[in-house]
Image (tube, rainbow, N blue to C red; front, side, top):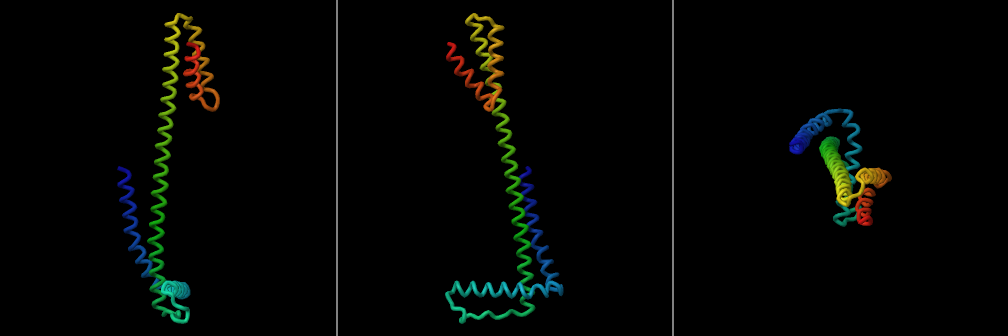
Length: 179
């Protein structure tokens, strides 16, 4: 249920970003401050675009001269670049958010699986100990002594860096060596 709502929300934000970008473009076209800063950046972009076209067509520099664009065209070009930059930035932010959210979800799943694995190992150790006690009782040895040995085995197995893994090996291999 959460995933479709997040996807729907991101689509809604993307849809809203286009009108917001258009309104910013309209403001930029009428703002004298924007007009002043826009002329230089639009001319730089125009020259870059022409040189890129020239290289792609294999023309020499003299064959396609960089013609300066008019002030009105520069404002329109710069406003369009600003609008596209806003839409692109919002799209990138949504992708980053989605990636972080999915990574957090994946981490939570791994932690849950690890928790279940530890619980299963503990339960297995407990069952192994009970089984070993039952085997020893069947063989006729003293139950209190066997219980103390089992507790010692459990205590040794849970200590150290491997914890339940060490206990599992000691129970598994210990029962074979005693038989």
